[in-house]
Length: 340
Image 1: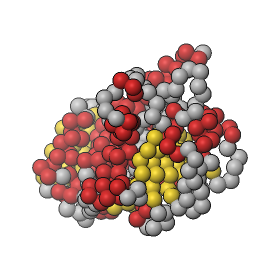
Image 2 (image 1 turned 30 degrees about the horizontal axis):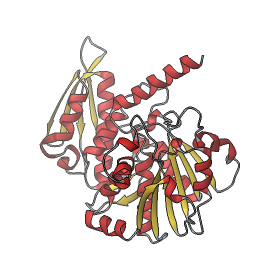
Image 3 (image 1 turned 120 degrees about the vertical axis):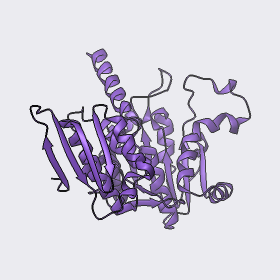
């Protein structure tokens, strides 16, 4: 129950209401952003509402269901500001994405931050990286208990970003000596041979998402220094063959595009004092039809081995634009119809 609110149902209309929300014990600018930028973004998202702010008082008028959602978002924004020092645009995107309660199991805002106070990592800009959804929190929890973790789920659920954050945390805490990030260089619509440049230039586009995640967490010059010294290594999966990866945090991303042989090769590279996270989306395999995804097969092969954990993420863990969740849901329904 949110306490800092006043509710005034509009006479002769049970579907609409007026509410006043009070920001307490924190500077309103840390919650609403400069020029109320965060509040304006919320107002634009909910078409049939009107929101105005003056000081710590926020007045809302509109459909009862929308006002309830906005009130919960505001309440969570206050919680975030108290814990992190401010609310940033990424927090707003996440809260708005989770405000779409079309699924049978919606994620409640209080589950988002209030039950996950632990910060994974402080970035070089001073921002914090936290596990924002139940699935991401499960990745953090399972990583602490297992040497090998499989994180399986659709696009936009933060599998890769959360995994990279855990790897950087382990490196900063000197629990490992290096980070190794690998991806299968599988053609998805274009042919590698026809791309311009040398081998590195041809492969880099496949590895770009891993660079992007690292650049958010590590200052540019320090990242370049670590890459040059191979403290952080980003490479195609094929480059792992014949190696033994000791004292390393190893991530295999887009693992749905690894064959059974490649998956076995990768898992048997892991050495002493090493940890591995394998991420992928089994609904988006780019392998040729005659080849089978190692990520699909591995779920049955390794399911009973102690020290190996499987975490499954779904639509409620999507933290991109709220339409992404609806797109994923629509594709699932389409595939289910085809199977039937």
